[in-house]
Amino acid sequence: MSLIDLVVQSAQWKGEAVDVFISGGRIKELAPAGREPVSESVQAVDAKGLVLLPSLTDVHTHLREPGFEYKEDIASGLAAAAQGGFGQVMAMANTNPVNDTASVTEHMLRQAQAVHPDGPRLYPIGALTRGLQGKELAPLAELAESGCQAFSNDGLPVLDTELFRRAVEYASDLGRIVIDHCEDPFMKPAAGINEGVVSSELGLAGQPDAGEAIQAARDILLAEYLDLPLHLAHISSAKSVELIAGAKRRGIKVTAETCPHYLVFTEEEVRGYNTAAKVNPPLRTQQDVLAVRQALREGVIDILATDHAPHARHEKEVEFDQAPCGVSGLDTALSVTWALVKEGELSLDDFLRAWSSGPCKIFGLDCNGFAPGDPADFLLFDPEAEWEVTPGAMLSKGKNTPLLGRVLTGRVRSHFLLGRNIVPSR
Image (cartoon, rainbow, N blue to C red; front, side):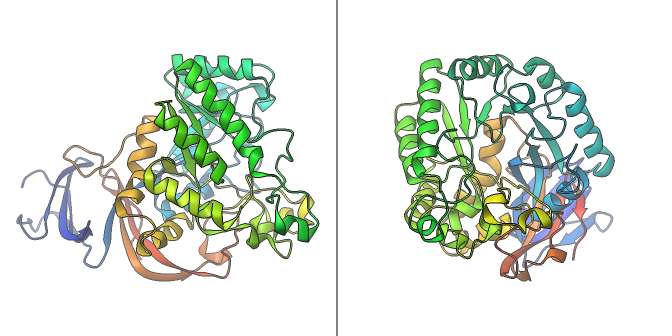
């Protein structure tokens, strides 16, 4: 072997011990451990006992900067991403000012480069409409040119279907995809709790699962009519899964994501008026959890995303109706979903597709499949390391998660992007 900058030795990849040879920030070769001699002049990393994974990609986060830096900023959000295993992060447009102009997009990109020059890489998502108001299109061409990787109206779905249609067409012309938050704006939007037994017992007005499914149905019909791609965000219900499955059988160009919290938590988590479990769409029933898991296994739901939504402590420590929706997820998502792999609920191939190859394919991002020439973006992951979710263990400013105080298994030991370690070994 020649021109090798780095070799990772004896890592576990799909049940086999391998060595990874890196040259110029790219994968040179992945070979059985010990097959190729290693020069003493080459930097070597001993990865015995650690699992090799591609760096993960999260296509749905809220990094809050500019305007809400007390909740999160780009520095803290990307630090949490690096520790959590995410090398590429797409950030929603609900900033202040809204990311509906090139100047905001460029500020975000400059800030990311300044505070994390080696990554994680930030890809802004541009606002679909000006101010996210749903009344007129944002300057999509300007946003695309300035660096926006996709467009979304984030948590404020566009009520005007004709306007939404034009947005999908225009985005497609620009080589971008629209991400839609599926929520009927008249059926208890952002209620933060599922309409059902728990909401009734707590005396809270909940959002029915039909509130998500109705909007998903509209988007599916529109994608079919236009024969254009459309991406559905954070799917949470069995009803939506059934609609997406039908769309895929008909060849409609719809893709979908769900989030770790919809795979492991139910509406029961909200008992005691637990605002840490108040999220939009809301946590639903065990039947919904099982349906979403099955849909992810079968590829009906294509990918995972965190919907990382950090909030300040004082914002969540209020009455349930007054608290904002959102769960902070960048620090914990890998451990939570790896547990499903260990339990046999997801295969390793499901995991890799959901967090790596799938999101990169949908949104046109570089992906490491460990083939020669792929970017040397990878993790060394300790699948047995236990850690307690505490405010101090989380690098995000947002500590708003139902997982606080719980012990998770699995920790990133090193995180390499283009062959550079952005999380020093620990």
